[in-house]
Image 1 (cartoon, rainbow, N blue to C red):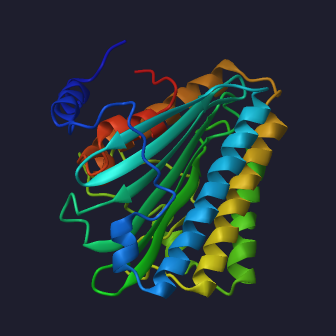
Image 2 (cartoon, one colour):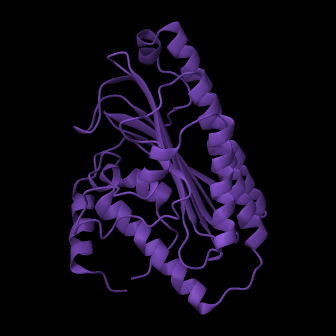
Length: 307
């Protein structure tokens, strides 16, 4: 395996910049409110926070559970990462159909970058799915819920598939139609969300060369018009996230036994390499260590990357 010189330098920088974490046997529960969070939140905010974490817990159990079922069983590996700025709990399982699915949940304790603001409540939830079959691209699905210390709130996130060249246009269209139906049902203007999911994502190395190449059928909920946390927006994001994810898992199940060609494998290899490059060079939360390498690499990286 040959690594490009810039990739070697980037990986060395990541390793040297790893923050020290607590012992591996120390567990955190990021699906409950800390005492400090309870003191800061209003009664209404606390009620929303509890609902949000219950929803995220349900997504964790539902979609990782389905992956385990598709694989005919399998071990779920858990790791906890504790830093002075955030706590993370991550789970990964692997198998013959869903080659790897990883989930992380982060609880921010203080800003770790100028990109972040002071918050009284902050949860980052993300699941990446890497099917064995190249007939289905990978899924990257994240959500962020925050109550800011200045009284504001927002819902952020990104969800789309990186299809490679082997995923069918019909399956990609299913995912687009799924989100479209939720935008219509909840009377949400998705124009900005749609534009940003495949817009210029990051000012990364070499003018976007390493940005992820998505199918452009999902949504980016980041940007100047992020949704506030309220009943209407929470109802939309819950249904939109779950239905998109469910439709994607349905596609995995439908395509798991289809024959593949060498060209399909090559397309999958290229897609996985692109995702590795995006996380290593482009996405500031990964590349700039806002989320530490140990956390995102365990959770989000493909089971194998070929150079």
